[in-house]
Amino acid sequence: MTQTSPVSDSKIYCNRCQSELVQVSQVVELLSNYKTPTTTTKFRCSNDECQNEADRKMAEAVMRREQQIKAKAQRTEQRAEQKLAKI
Image (cartoon, rainbow, N blue to C red):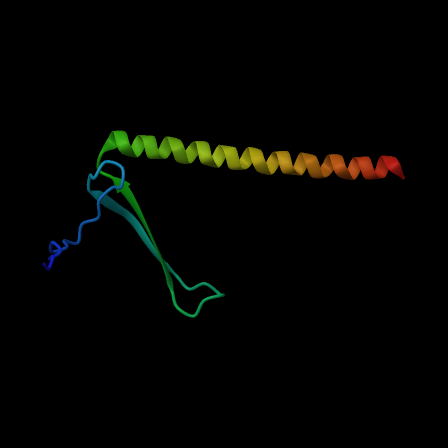
């Protein structure tokens, strides 16, 4: 039995709510480490509730990352102070 896949339209859908995604921006960059250009495309969910939830989660992730970086810097500083105190 053969299966046929549905004809793909050019629309892109949200993984969470299956709403259509809207393209916000597209940037083509030529990075020094790569021979071909890199395209970065940003999308927004057309469902405002879903997009607000995604924005909230992203803000929390950024805040957690900043806290981790700050904590690492403090630990590094404390270790350096402990080494100096031993000398």
